[in-house]
View (spheres, rainbow, N blue to C red):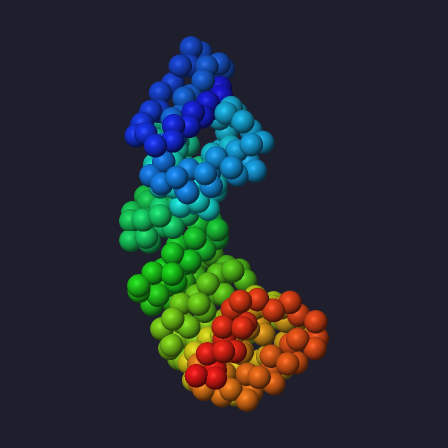
Length: 273
């Protein structure tokens, strides 16, 4: 069985019909329509879309790739139609497909509605939990990321680097040093502090929670640093109106050959005003 994709820009179609004549043959037709030209172009110009053309095997892998492209372009209507096709084909019990669908709803509708799908999922893996953690961290209530993280541990799901770095982003938004310190303990216990992404998230959290001395100590102890790490510390100094330290760090970063980006320059300039 094949999935046939038909795109209709500037129109409003909703079609998910099967022309299957046997268990092995037939085609599932999916009409894709757009809400904005930018979303439509982003989806249709994706490398995956060009690779498969308008036909691909109806497998969980095919749906995961399509849902991933829908999430990247924030194309909710495509995600909804794919959800209809997934239900029709009986793939709602597949944890990989449902996790990809969860990501679409989380990015397009917000975590509140995505939670409805999350609660209905019969199976959840660490990627599923990470998706919902990310949704909470980016929402208006990042404190729910801490609650979800606790539920994840209670469910016996071991955290990953992405899990803790995502929750640390929520702690940064909350500017809650106690919650951040608790996550720091989790990082130490699991040996995550040597990871550059986790280390950068910890540094950013402490800098936003008025602990620049701790942030600087973490920075000095990091074995690996990327441009985001440097920019996070510069941003911290800028936030606390310490322009001299921000300038010195900027100079050191440039001397070491790091490629500066717009965020780095913006952080430096904000420290001067």
